[in-house]
Amino acid sequence: MKIIKAGMTLVLSVLTSTMLATAVQAAEGPGTKTADSYRFGGVPKVVHPWFDKVNEGAQQAAAAIKAQTGTEVKIQYSAPQSASVSEQNQIIERAIATRPDGLIIDLLDPNGNRSVLRDASSQGIPVTLFDSSNPEGMNLTTVGSDFCEQARMAANRLVELLDGEGQVAIMMGVPTAPNHAERARCARDVFESTKGIEVVATGVDNDDINTAQQQASAIMQANPGIDGWVASDAAGPVGIGQAIKEAGKTGKVKLVGLDDLNQMLALIREGVADSSSASRPTMQGYWAVINMWQHATGAVTPDHIDTGNVMITPDNIDSYNKQ
Image (cartoon, rainbow, N blue to C red; front, top):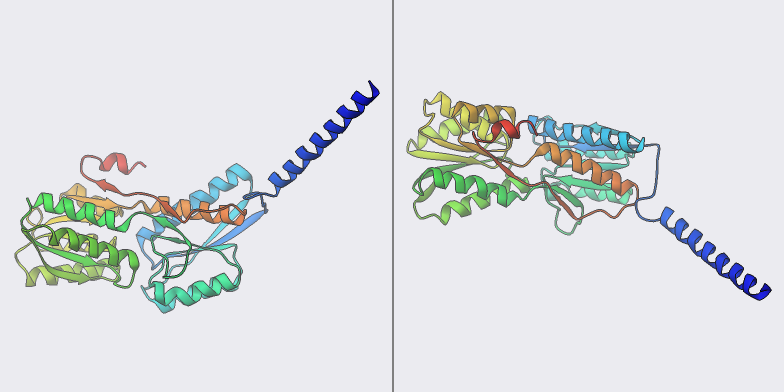
């Protein structure tokens, strides 16, 4: 009996040691680092109501983390006054100098922003990109929708509205911005693959509503036969809609917009725009912060978080606006 008891004691001792070791390993595993607070910097492309929605989502995520874990999360949001790469880089550099726990950035120009991203990396400051693409050779987590899918949704809907025939125009945002350039390319691909559709003009608004309105007015005066528009940025379709109203062409020139600014939703309700392909900016801000927080805890984070696209129409606009 003594031998049996001794053997059982040894087994229990080994099991206890193993369980304790496993518990220690689990406590020190991915995602187990803790802190009383985190501070993340948020830098969008420009001062813009679309990015206000991103910031709103970021603040919602901060509140959710606080509610679930008790950890304070502060978002320091700083937007360039204009779509200037140098201005954005200066803001990012100032943010890096404050030693934040992470940065959330929408790149104006992957090549032009590369140096500040490397600077952040060299100082051990993690970066999550939203509504943007990685510069070549970098592998940062990106949060956002499929740019090409969003553009195809809008372009295909316009083709359907025009029964496959007509003259169309595309409004670019910031030409160096990867999401804007990709959307314009994919929309053009849809139009060029449709025999009866002709792209007669492309405007550049630099993500500014007033510029988009001026560009759209000039393009429609130079091309009075234009039947429809799509855009590559959120400001573009709002300016186009205003130009259509000014020209008295509501119902005559079809507009399929982009994203879900309040002005865009109003244009749909007024019948100036048929619809809009939206990329859910609030969700992008929310999941960018969640990803940054997970990274700060030592968790393994994904390469990409797809927040999806949705087509807003008169049939679903009320339900969408409540999301």
